[in-house]
Image 1: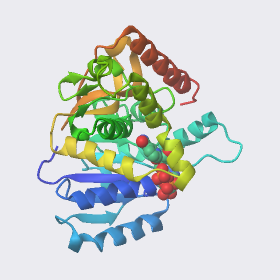
Image 2: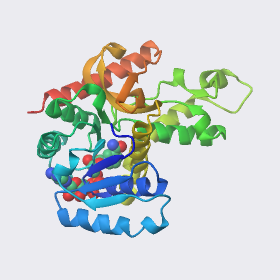
Image 3: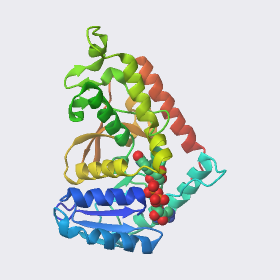
Length: 317
Ligand code: NAD
């Protein structure tokens, strides 16, 4: 990877893609070249113009332009936020099949360009779309990453920080599993600084109660539905989550983020892409961290794995 020139290609310049691009420009210094690709070329061109006009106010300069697949050749990261929306009467699986076709039309020309970097997928259902990217690209598993439960984990840390009146950065907790209805919080692993929250809940002398933990977990799981009900789509949070992962890769940070990664025996499973805490650096997933789950938590994780496996296997790839 070229460390002096850091080039990111974004495919899909809709709400999610452009929220990421906007966060990238505003945070500054993460990369110095950003290429925008969309099936709607005019839209990509308009977005590039709009972002460029803000550069005079940005922290650092960047080269931003609407491009095409040949621009992927020397990119460090391809971010994919392209997708089609659910049509009336369409099942989730029909949508999945259509998005699989969209991905075929994207991954094939990216690979053909000679691209040799890291794929970062945000399109939903993100765990399956990441696995499709892996299958179609035939890249090594460490170089195919999905946003997984990174956003859900951020939501959890924010809510727990608010509940305990502590900076969310001092809450160490993860949402793991499918980015969807079967995701869950392994409560046994939630820490406030170095203290297990289960100890805080067990202490009868305070106002904190384990039932609140379940309420917070439910709030995290249903956040997307609530936002979609209120404003049709969610995009700022995930845009910032993508930015965080891109920064961890390009900065070779070795930071822990709950991304969708391919299990190779970790948590007793193989082949599936699922949200787990991973060490992320310049070469993508450096290591998958195995949390010490209780038996009940492990059962929840396995059922999430099964859901993802069944969905993937029902596809015609
Ligand atoms: P959007 O409709 O605003 O944007 C999608 C873009 O993809 C459009 O600009 C469209 O022209 C483009 N596109 C469609 N087919 C294409 C193709 N073949 N090649 C190139 N571009 C193509 O949608 P959005 O709100 O930006 O959402 C994008 C995806 O992100 C959805 O799948 C959504 O569910 C997902 N999402 C993920 C998370 C997460 O946490 N991972 C959170 C929110 C949304």
